[in-house]
Length: 183
Image (cartoon, rainbow, N blue to C red; front, side):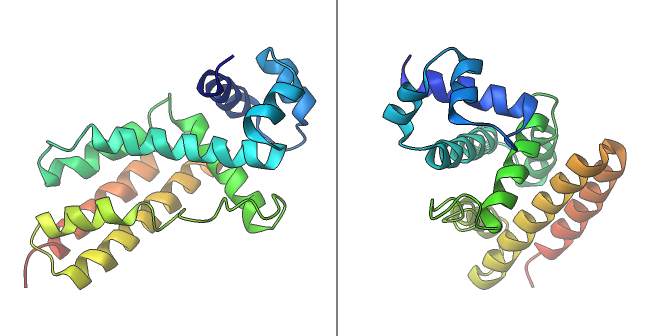
């Protein structure tokens, strides 16, 4: 199995069952390979889990990149709709599960937290700049937008109350739109 196909299979497996008590051998058996093959491609269970988070984020970023030609005022709503789609929702749960493990140091020195915020900021800053924000305001708005989005996604994972979370995001997007008006 190629590394990317293997990673896709692991992402699918963990998205459906979580990563709590999984072993490398258990993951390997579930995706139809050997633990040695996982070690060959990923080095360790911890690195495999880091690669899983990176893949989840890559899929989220791909959903955002697909909207590059959208008017900025529509982009946030369409991106949110994609993030909360039935296809991506299991990945959101998996992201937070692994993020929590990394924050507690349970994944060792894997670097999982490296770039978890900063890698998102350039695209979000560019969006703010395209709406006429100053660079300083665009940077602050980018961080706020990421924090609100992740917070509401965590709310969704915890409560499964899509209607309430969508209502909160709609309010945020309205406030963001008001804040992006040049001063």
